[in-house]
Amino acid sequence: MKERLSKKDIVTRLSAKTGLSKRFLNSFINALLEEMKNSLDLGEKIKIINFGTFEVKRSKDRIGKDFKTGEPIRVPGLRKVFFYPAPELKNLINEKERSART
Image 1 (cartoon, helix red, strand yellow):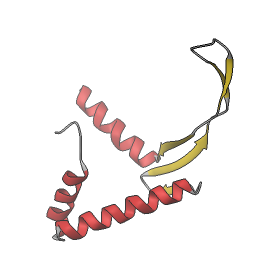
Image 2 (cartoon, helix red, strand yellow; image 1 turned 45 degrees about the horizontal axis):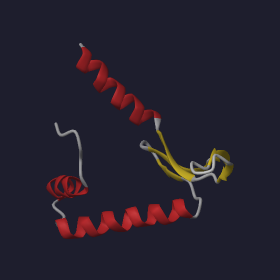
Image 3 (cartoon, helix red, strand yellow; image 1 turned 135 degrees about the vertical axis):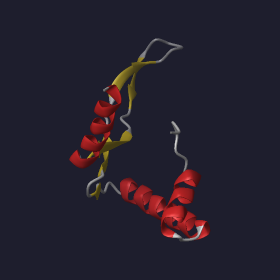
Image 4 (cartoon, helix red, strand yellow; image 1 turned 90 degrees about the horizontal axis):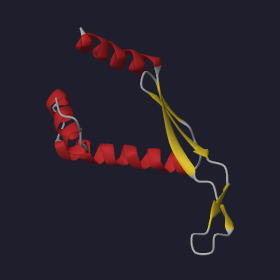
């Protein structure tokens, strides 16, 4: 098993499973990912049943230090993407880990 799965690997696997062309699947995945990025940018939550939820949250502003002068400065909070796996995905991953231990 590979430790990293690339988009190219996903396209190849889906093509083998479905018989659809790699060109079509690559375009489809690009469109799907673009739509997900746009939705997250708008602050929309993305929920994929049996997989998980993607959500954007804003971190709080904080006080930092200017390295040159040592003066305190305000560091604005950032928007971050969080992923919360669905129970089905958690169970699947944990079952495989448990079976690997035995």
